[in-house]
Length: 160
Image (cartoon, rainbow, N blue to C red; front, side, top):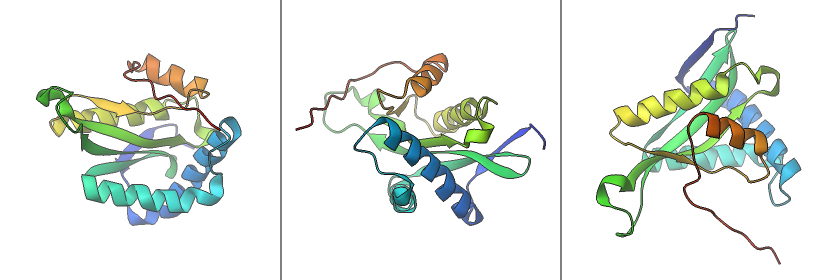
C-alpha cells in the first residue's frame, strides 16, 4: 500500500467511506463524552452536515492512501452575527468534522487535511479558520495546538 496522501474533494461514491469514518468519530467521542451519539447516528449526522455545507458554502475534503479513503474533513463558511466582532474578522471558515481511520493514524493525514482546508479558506478570502474540540479529546487538542490553533473562546456546560 502506498503511503502517499492524496487530497481531493469528496464525490458521491465516497458516501459509504464517509459514513464509516463519521461512525468511527462518533464511537470515539461517545467513549469520552456521555452525551455523544455512537456510530448509529453517523449517516444522519453526515446528511445534516452536508446540508449545512450546501446552505452555507463549504467543502468536504477526502484524504486517500493506497487508493482508499483514509480520512475526511468538512467545513463551512460562516459569519459572526452582530457587531461584537470587527467586520474584517466576522467571516470565517468553521471545521465541522475531521476523522482519520484508526489504521491510518500517525501518518500525517490529519495535518494534511488541516493544511488543505486552511489553504482553501484563505483562497476563498477568509483569514481565520475555527473548530470545536471536546475538552476530553487530549490527542486532538495537542494536534490542533501543534498546527497553530489556540483557544479562542471557552464553551462551558453544566448538566443536571
